[in-house]
Image: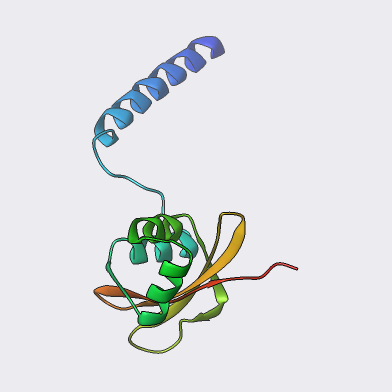
Amino acid sequence: MKLIHRIGYYLGGFSIGLVVLAFFLSGKKTSCDYGPDARTIKNISIKKKSYTDAAKVSMSRYSLDTLMISKLIKTSDVNFSKSETQGEGCKTYLIENTYKDKDLEMRIENCDSTATILSITFLETN
């Protein structure tokens, strides 16, 4: 069998495999959350959220609602060096993002069934 025929068969089988794979995965909510940052954000996003009084004050001061907080969490980055992830029980994460061209930090306590937003701080830029 010539090399060009082998390549043709390979590409034909490969393309059929891609079509079958796309067919089976098209209706499912598949994601590729393999990094620690993405796994942490996804874990926090799917949980019921509660807010401390300090977080509620910051939300009213900066005109943030719960929908915007959820959107900010999903597009944020976790700063693991400033997070408290050691030990048993709930872990506290520092999540960083920008909102209206201002840097913000959210401190979130991630427990088994709930995520509590402890504080929302807008950083002053010099």
